[in-house]
Image (cartoon, rainbow, N blue to C red):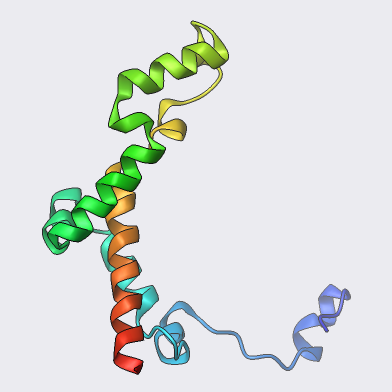
Length: 122
């Protein structure tokens, strides 16, 4: 258990700390998941889309449309106006209510990575 005595916490704790680089070797179920995630987050939307299969693109777009007002910014703005009034942009940000499809491409590619490792284990 971690001591609440801050000055002696480091001396009394005999726990090894893992850094980001250690995760790839310590995560046995899905190796390199952290590294792949970091790589995908550094790519543009066009690059991510080029990595996806047609099935993955359709799935990502379907999820994106389901959670983002059918992919319409105008529908999102209309809903925010209904909820917050005409000055909704003073209270909330559009980007908090309308996510980029890029996030869904990353999510689908990470799901695909996990699925590939699950199939390899069988």
